[in-house]
Image (cartoon, rainbow, N blue to C red):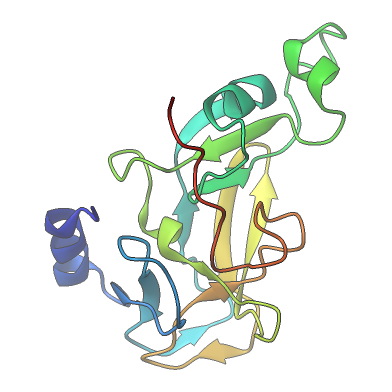
Length: 173
């Protein structure tokens, strides 16, 4: 269930963003919120940092064996590679070594509500990755008030073929 108390507080206090029901059709209940502008946002506007629990590749895949986490973001290479050739994540994956898991609204920021633009949409924000910090900025000259912020999650998004409807989790025995 979305954390409505946190959302209401965010909406009442943020100067240029709000969380509300997404304009994307077909999103499942409890996953149908989006992040919207409430003012004109020029391209140099810092829209916020994606926050979450930092997980190694192995921790992420232990927690989400079906790669079905809705609120996660690959967060870059292992900072220990230069000092430690035997780090745990290097063995598991040569490219993505950390993920930010924002599944819990207690550790995730408002940027967890930036949705995928879909196969026929155009992104209007993009992330800047610096080590394990991800900050979003507009990737268009400006964003008008009332516009939903959208990012292209790419083909590696866990539910590739049906980008807005992930597979159901497996049934428990």
